[in-house]
Amino acid sequence: MNDKVRKIIAIILFTLLLVISSTNYYGIKGIDNLAYVVAMGLDIGDNENLKLSLQISLPNSSDGGSSSSSQSSSVVVDTIECPSINTGITLFNGYLGKEVNLSHCKVLVISEALAAQGISEHLYTLTNDIQFRNDTNIIISKCDAKSYLEYSAPALDKVSARYYEIAPSSSEYTGYTEKVTLNQFFSSVTDSFSSPVAILGSINSKASQDSNSNNSSSSYYIAGQTPISGEVSVENMGLAVFNEDKLVGELNGFESICHLIVSSKLKNAHIRIPSPIEQLEYIDLYIELKNNTKNSLKLVNSSPYITSDINITARMQSMNNDIDLNDDTTIEKVEQAAENFLKQNIYSYLYKTSKELNTDIDSFGLYSLKYFSTTAEWEQYNWLHRYKDAFFNVNIDVNLSSSYLLVST
Image (cartoon, rainbow, N blue to C red; front, side, top):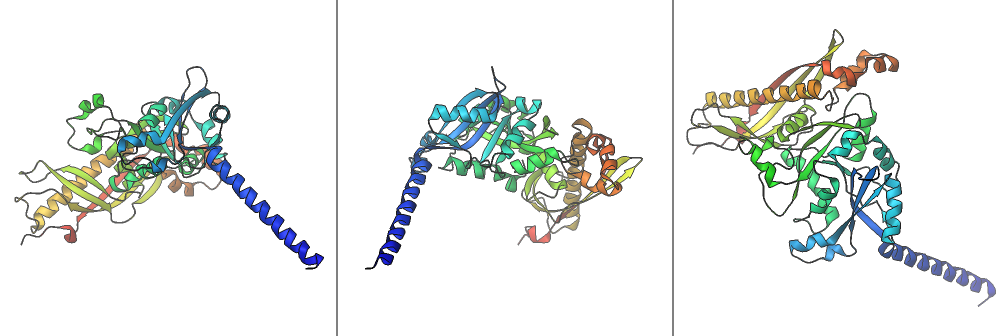
């Protein structure tokens, strides 16, 4: 073997040793030296500006026991008071003896009290952090964020990170809230033609359930008020509404459905309407958007006049022998009742957002841009301030499609 061949073999062996050693180091650091955060909570501090809570996944937690009671031990929640998020993370690094890693964080929970003060500083901090994911879900908690994290037990999912990823997706089959990510929220905070919303969450409290016990529909609840008892201690229902970066109000489950209808985001939902048929008190309907809602806007004496044309496909889900679905008159009565019910609630929702909350969470401002030829004119008009002067026209067509009707045999 000549010297040239020996030299090539030596280089190859040296390269392999470098690769193997660096791989082992990375593996050691990934397992032993990193603390993976699955959820972050922000509260007002008692002594400092901020109370930072981190829910950290324990190593091999996905291999935990089969009983649901063991799931709470798969994560730990630690809290520290600090002047800023970055300072808090640095303090956690020293306290834990590990480097905090935010790349697996699935949810950011912010207390209502902190959100009411304004959260732009914290948003800019997290959006500038290369580890923090833009698709992290944003939850505004009616209780303190630390308690929300402590009571969040993934009873139906063994892995806490998977639980936080799936739980907000309930909006796709209930309509009671909207899945909102950091990227969406930050964009709405910083633009000039819309206002942000976030998921509304809370601990399920038996004390608050009695106040809404007479509701004819479960969709009128907000987080923390639903009459449910079970192993899951927290719930997400309704929306937290912001004016720029400050929390100004909230929407219940049905108002959230109205928001999703107007903004063309509704997948499907169940609603309960007063029955137009004497023998029944209420009728349950399963609804979907037949097509995207058509929104248009005119400026009348500088005030926005907004029209929403809505087409809904419905399926009847509650009935008795007194309802004849082969009778066109009966079908028309149900359709008309659904149209009247939805129109009344959507009007109420729209005027609540404009007059009471002064927040354009449906991005109607986009439709007004065509009336301004320059950025200076648009900024001078100040859409987010003028939205309170808006008035509305809502047109709804509900179709009980024949393919959805039960035909007597």
